[in-house]
Length: 512
Picture 1 (cartoon, one colour):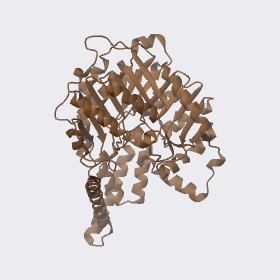
Picture 2 (cartoon, one colour):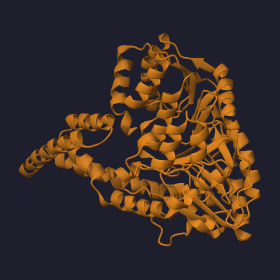
Picture 3 (tube, helix red, strand yellow):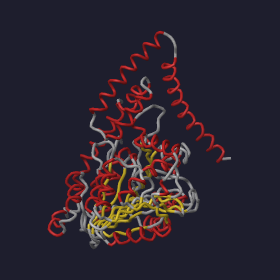
Picture 4 (cartoon, helix red, strand yellow):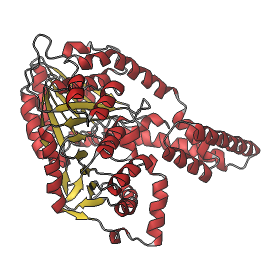
């Protein structure tokens, strides 16, 4: 009975939002198609608006792929296109969100260096990685740390087991931030621990993205958690209006425990991530745990997001775990957590990937669930391969979105002709997001190789240099190659209809 009531409530809320969106679309189409004199005047005015919008887009500082997509859309729909662009981009909400994030960043930024500044030591000893470390610390604002241990998890099952163990050890607070939550055998045991820890007096918080959980959670889930003592906030409520803000989703996955231990990676909290529910065959994923100074960085990244727009702001420095004694964790190379935000103009995740590719001398191995890239990444990958670097990419063989699969495969031919080896994971869906290069550097995080992750979503990751986890990331990749299919140029041959569909979808790739 409770389950049926849950379904009714969920269905009512979701259908209402979708219905309002369709009403708006219908109204716009009426304005375009109506035959009255006022409608003709409206059409002329909207045509003029589209011309002005095209001029604005051409001169705007933005990725050329986005410019091309919007101009092509306006050419197809000269009356509707310009108005649609205005509805998406000229609103007050994104500006308000930018102000909230700017205020939160201003308060938190000095706190990243509470464990100390390790960049000077790196500058004295390892010059090869300096450009990337300097960029992340001195420009993006994410310092490098030394007193940190790393542990890499090549599957959701290994990550889940370790996460449960570490959650049980929590003494002060537990912070969780995820894109997707779905009740079941993965999420429910975690919630039980959170409820018990909250009763013990710990500060327990959970944040999730509204669109990511749009169809997976009941509409009153936030209140259910709060009744269990778990503080909860929903990021960016999905509203029945056209807005570019709806594209800016919180795609991060973070668990922070006392500021001493933290996790991130590709896993959300749903049963398919630990292969209890075979949604797309075997689910291949990856995560990393950091223990020590670098865990503080992911804690601050969580608090920045949590405090953005909150009426009562945390004094984030109060959560620092080593106020009286130095961090006792021994060093395992250099660890640099980072975050990416669509609210600013800096594409941190893309720059991390491009610098790894450009600095590679021997190899760069990449796991990604999607391969929808712009000219910058495409040029970096092909140039590295043409220069003799062993560039390999593993994508899924079974996909969760057919249109993304079509677009991803449209890049195969160009990459393979340049010397890039492209594989498809034949056991199921490869959801890992990892880069590893030259036995020295790697990154594990949440950023896919697609436009949404690189430019529209809030993302995070961990860059590691000369850490033991680097070898584990490489080992995991090489273990995945034998159960993946190497794609040949012959596999890329398609008929004219399929080629045309892929070419059209590729134009709209930035909106996927």
